Length: 119
Image (cartoon, rainbow, N blue to C red; front, side, top):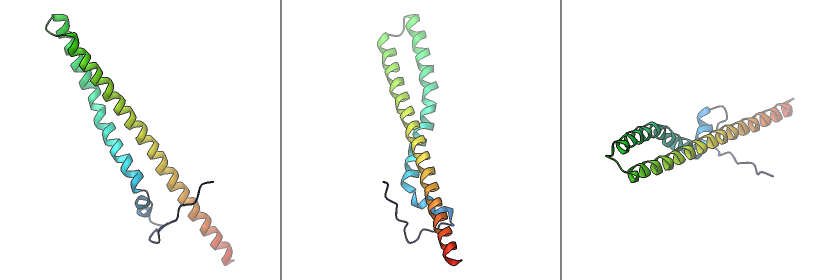
């Protein structure tokens, strides 16, 4: 069974910033992977244009197969990195949402328990 995370003494459940501070590592992973993904999205069309130009050069006799092979291998590796970053970003966004949801439910349960004790 999952052990409950201890809340730091400075955690204020009525402040949104407390949830962001508690999850700063997850948000850092989301930020870094998101930046890699978003910048990497620009690489796809760039490589496609380069490969088209290289194909035209090959058909004219000015280019060589090796040039195209290097472009294709670079394109595939960049796309793998971009899609991996997309996976990481999506995973950690969901993790952040689930962690915040769990913390809020724990706080709700504590407030209900305190309310019943006062009755």
